[in-house]
Image (cartoon, rainbow, N blue to C red; front, side, top):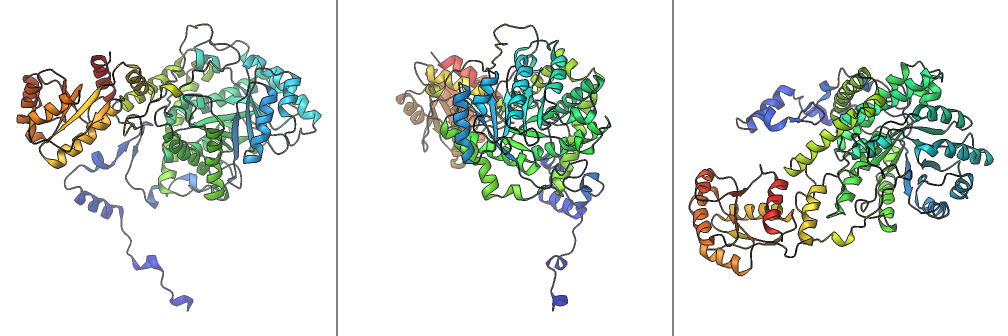
Amino acid sequence: MADKKEKLFDMFPGVSYEEWRAKVEADLKGADFDKKLVWRTNEGFNVQPMYRAENIADLKTTESLPGEYPYIRGTKENNNWLTRQEIIADTPAKANEVAIEVLGKGVNSLGFKLEDVSAEAIATLLNGIDLAKVEINIHCCNRKAVECANNLVAYIKEKGAEETFKGSLDYNPCRPAFKHGKAMPEWAVENAKQLMEACKPVKGLRFLAVDSVMLCDGGAYIYQELGYALAWGAQWMTTLTDAGYEAAEVACRIKFNMGISSNFFMEIAKFRAARMLWAEIVKQYEPKCECACKMMAHAATSKFNQTIYDAYVNLLRSQTEAMSAAVAGVDSITSVPFDTPYKTPDAFSERIARNQQLLLKEESHLDKVVDPAGGSYYVETLTVAIAEQAWKLFLAVEEDGGFFAQVGAGKVQEAVNESCKKRHTDVARRKEILLGTNQYPNINEMAADKIEKTACSCSCHCGEEEAEGTKLCGKRAASDFEALRLATEHAANRPKVFMLTIGNLAMRLARAQFSTNFFGCAGYEIIDNLGFDTVQQGVDAALEKGADVVVLCSSDDEYATLAPEAYAYLNGRAEFVVAGAPACADDLKAVGIKDFIHVRCNVLDTLKDFNARLLK
């Protein structure tokens, strides 16, 4: 009977790529295949609309198993990751209280930011926490890192947890340069050597930070974050092996803290490529143990794309970001609370952030499947493509003196800032969409009252003096649009935008919707309408409503007669806008009409111009 069972796929003939391509081109009806369906990534390569088995036939990335060198498929034989929560508290005692509470709610990794790193503070902070079961991660001022390490190691030894402790101390001498444009500190390497000695008794304590999350949050492209992260890690390897330390000893002290953007598949590919490339880099230093080639990667959801307006949309972004990291097989994840851009996260937002990861584990079971993206034609191809671009950047940094030298010269900051500027332009032109900010805004939302100003959280007070140098811009992608809306909120009168809908039903509805979204991004009051029989009727209704802007919404063909008529009848009593870019635009400009809104507009610049005219 078994031999008689039909195999479903045997019933269908194989289809070649050429046949698929011919069918697609026929459906495109003459449109160019490459222009319509192939897109160019910010990482510098093209992405095809479909991938097949032959696309990965020659890739070496599919040959290894999870847990095997070069670890592209993961550094472990399972996909379990640690759920980290960053503990926000004013004192070690309060931080300990919060930590004890959240450990019973699914958290098994804690992040602390300390100003006081004394032995008493460390003991108070970690009192009652099982060091064998909970990962401990401490962020403190770089100048205090050695003192913190000594006191932490002493506490770990006192508890007899030298062999079981897992955690990190975030020693990052690049932080002052990135945050404040300061020069690389002269003591950076000497402190790293002291840390190597101080932490010897505790093998599971990593302290050489590669905080590429700062680059991600600064607006870097994916290949930049990865390329610079690899160069940063290699700098630690070179610096400390040259100082006499064995390669495996150094590699096992490095912790990669990486960001996650909202580009779902590209981020999966980034982490897979990162493990592969890092393994190759470490191997060149000839470590005694191949396991030293494993990357320890923590991932944090992006702050760059978080928004103040429509803040709950941040949950959608961070959920897909956390999922990218989980599918990619990272070691631990921080889900940044949705209200981070405008206030100190509260109990509700922190709970939701924890639950995002619990959903991925308890309901989606992503921790039960090792390398779920492995073998995907698309992801495997992306992995290799991103690896190639990141490797080029890594080599360029190495040839130009190494990572620390480039940071000291401001070259890393300049490159990331250029990308940040480009991304802000893309957001302004809606080439990059931030739902609720530059597209489909919640028009009537007011946010000024919920914004809490907070001081610099850097405990070393390194931002108190202006430094000559280049720092990371760090402006969130939504910041320019948020400034527009806040200006509207603070204005004496909120501008009113009236949709003068007339003529062709389909076109007037579509253009009214477009215009509503367009002006809604500045927080203006929108007055929509079902339609008017005459221009005069529409203009009169607009003036009766006290409109500051009248938007004519109709079809291109009808604009030739309707627009001059409406403009003349309005006679400067409100700003006049044509929704669209009709062929008769030059003729309309000739009669004095100067404002047109359409998909090719720079939305931000256009709205800034209207703000300058309307806000008083």
